[in-house]
Length: 285
Image 1 (cartoon, one colour):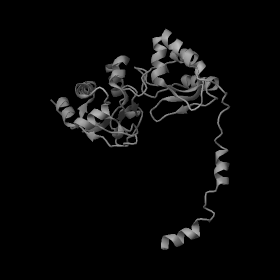
Image 2 (image 1 turned 90 degrees about the vertical axis):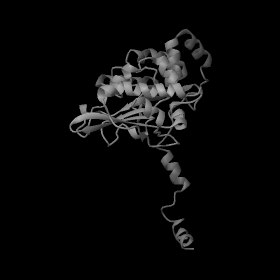
Image 3 (image 1 turned 30 degrees about the vertical axis):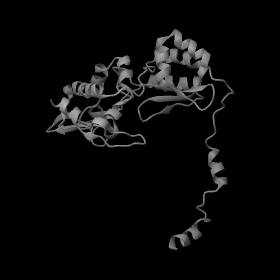
Image 4 (image 1 turned 180 degrees about the horizontal axis):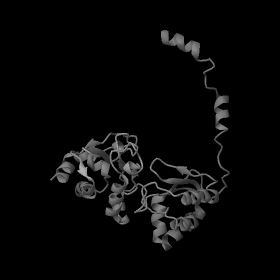
């Protein structure tokens, strides 16, 4: 009764969200000036057939759009040899120009450390791909093991206990075969240089946390995290590792996955089915 009485007092008070207010706020979020287009299915099919690299990029870095004739393009900032998410001032200028040319002047940064052009005409995708290939934005590794999140770590951050970027670089070089990455399927690998978790290591399928041991840098590994609807905090594998060991540690984890997975399983599926034990046994054997 008390709740009902309170509701009677507040339901029509000035805090009520009216349709008029909803429409007013919607006015700040107008759609771009989309054209009435048809999906460029035949053109894209022909271009894919003629160019394998374009086909790879279209398959992995281009998403469906709610408007016919448009596509969502992710500019990946995960080229091997470059710190994940790193951009120079010149590259930012290039992305601004690309946004003006292809996406109504708008570019978006993602928490996965990539950039998105959200409103690209399908009939201009090949043209865009040709432009960004030379800029280093067309690495077709979106959602793969090397599309990792990595904080600046000890190279740039005063809070960090350990460096992150050299670990990311070593793993990139260890897994620099796109066909193998595609075979592994979607894997979130996240690296943080300290417990502040700017790299979201705790929700990575494979999480790496830099820790300090008596002034030396070590790395703790966790498995099974997820930031999706089935969110989970990863479980710590065991004692931490030296930096030079990290590529081999990740390779052993991937080997256990490959040996145990069924055809339709992702890394996370296999981990949830077999548990931490097989990974732990292999890594610490």
